[in-house]
Image (cartoon, rainbow, N blue to C red; front, side, top):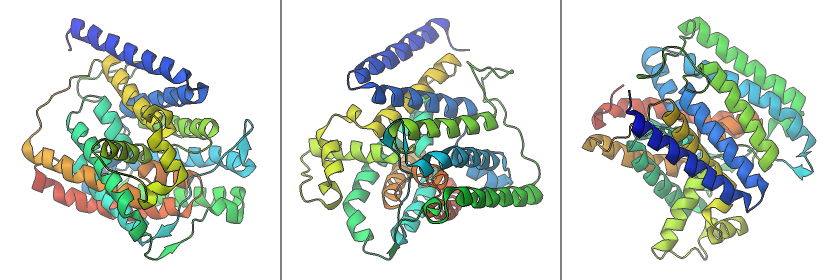
Length: 385
């Protein structure tokens, strides 16, 4: 068990950080503060439910374990059901809403494939990098830093990649109507579940993490995977209601990389992707004026608070050299791939499918082979199964 005095210190730090940020964000209006709280809830949910996409795909490919995949199916089904009436209305609470919809092309498919490799080498996905770092995994600090570098680099190359064949963005809800699109997607998810169940058997319930309580606790965790899946869907829906767009992650990391580049002398004028009005404003404004960045910070803070409350926040600075190299390579691939693919497992896959976007389905179809290859490469970097 962690020393009580140390535990109390971490609790004080967690409370101070969260309250300070909430008070700061309230000065910019209630929306950012609400999104930060949603981010905290996302981080705590991801941590307590141990709902990581990377580990779920690794267990599936290596052991045929489908619990994590089934949790994602439930998450998607709940999210798309909640999203459909909101997206069909086109507005909520007096402001417009839009789904996560993006073009489909060579760059998107390649980006998702590279992202899949990066997941297994870097040790996390978009959400996984943030919540495991918040939970005390020092290796993920390196992964996140290289994630930001890769995202920024990808933004500089994106204009060239988009010269390759690419089809316009397509939302099935807009083409078929959201009722039909929702029904079709639910049927697809149901078929995927039936095939997985017949081929690999009943999902195995998740086990408490090492050092965790024997009995699940709402405050201290661990939480059942399916509870985590439903909560993530609801929190993504709340993000749609508050922000006007679904949950996304990797734009924040790309922005952080660009801001770091500006500090060392990079000039964004005339730099393709960064010539857009939205990007220019994001570069000019403070980081905490950006909704995605606010939620990303919230995820880290939420996981930090959850780990401290559970008595499992024990950060270590020891990272084996080959694992460190895996974080560098994997983090870069995560960032670069996400920028080419218009998002990660959250912004492109989760939010994309919930928005009935065709690119969300094709994203996961390309990312899974990337994960398979990444798993094969893990032993080269001394990484365990």
